[in-house]
Length: 160
Image (cartoon, rainbow, N blue to C red; front, side):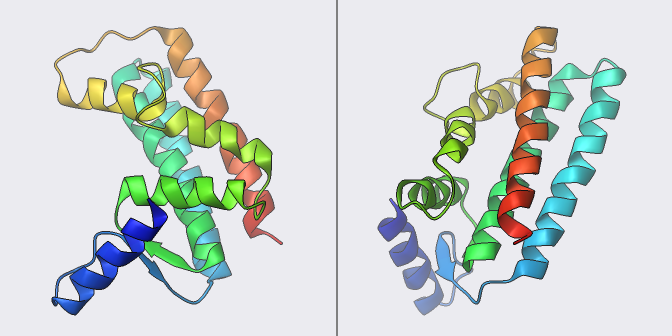
């Protein structure tokens, strides 16, 4: 998948289009930290939505907490992504290659669209694209824990 993402971006750029894949760039620790800051900002709003009872929106916000953590890691390792699947594929590849802790795989599993309907992307799609509002509060609490842990672990990667 990572190879496809790199080739797809290369082809987009060659055709004069905005790329929709992965582009190798200079590693940028400051940008990585900015993405972590954005994830923390999103987490603050997650907590506001949760406290206000907007659990469906908390799920959407939780997705962006996790996604900005992934983008922080990509910036740290020198990649620009404009594709969620490519972003996740590269983070998973970094785990598989031992460049980040094997423990980070739990976040990849939590986010992956193929990991079950109680995971981040399927939940986000359900509550963003359907009229369903009601959600089990326990799922929101579990997502909150994933978001908090992922930010902490991402900081460990980008604050070297």
